[in-house]
Image (tube, rainbow, N blue to C red; front, side, top):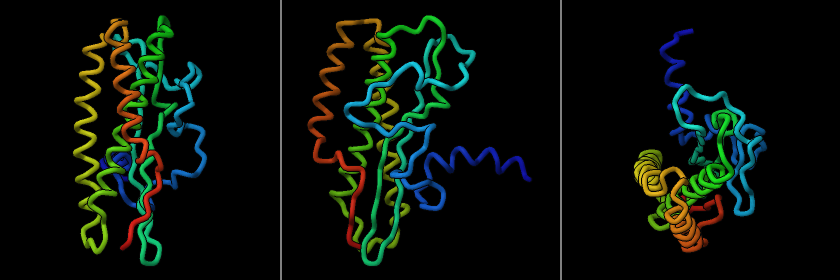
Length: 191
């Protein structure tokens, strides 16, 4: 098998919008945790092999856009997952750091909701270039999400600055509440 193709697989999986590449978000997968308001990450969820970098914890999340055409409609699902086998912790990771990473998982859910909101607001009816439009929406929000996460880590000092962490916790909860109308991962649009 051509090994250069193998290097492209992770990229295709993360940004793919094709239904044949991504499993249905409703399907069970023990290596993924679908974001839910009442679910709290546990140390057991961090089952990946620790990296060599100095940090004590690594959280990997994934937002996917799954599209399924059904007759005159398009079903779009935009779930947010925690990836257990790519997330890890090292000796010395604290409960505060775990709580910090829980908020990070929620930040990704906020950006999944932003993607859902934009898809709903612009609609996709009659769009002959739906893949391109979905990909542009996804890329825009993921770039903003990356910058947002950098700011979160910087201002909270990775959860060590308790005062700032509390402010961010409140801010994230408020943002999540403001997007409560985009909580459902399933969108049904006219084609």
